[in-house]
Image (cartoon, rainbow, N blue to C red):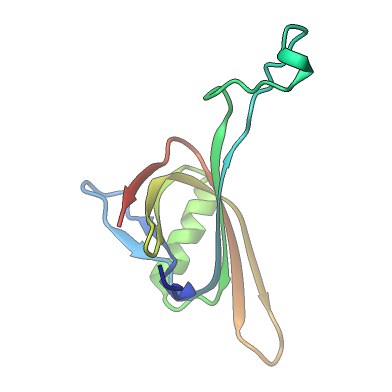
Length: 138
């Protein structure tokens, strides 16, 4: 597998319709998608030679997403703002090139705005999974 372009990693927000239509959150220059699975320690006095034993499938799975950049259109800006202020889970798609698409409900956990006097206004957004995440290979 050859290297992929970072700009091909996409964060898309759903419109709430049926069927759901997804639009790319415009202007995100830096993106990070983290998948996590906490383990549950099942070690006891009967564990062989006191080696730690983990209980398979018992932990909590989660996904977190962060992105930063500049808003390029009013629609994606408004969609992220509405999702933040409503604090209701919205459908998102996370496109990872040559890997797949992760889809599911996320809450906008943080929304930051910044700007220098001689530069563009910028934003940063953090998403936290709020339910089951599905995966479809590309």
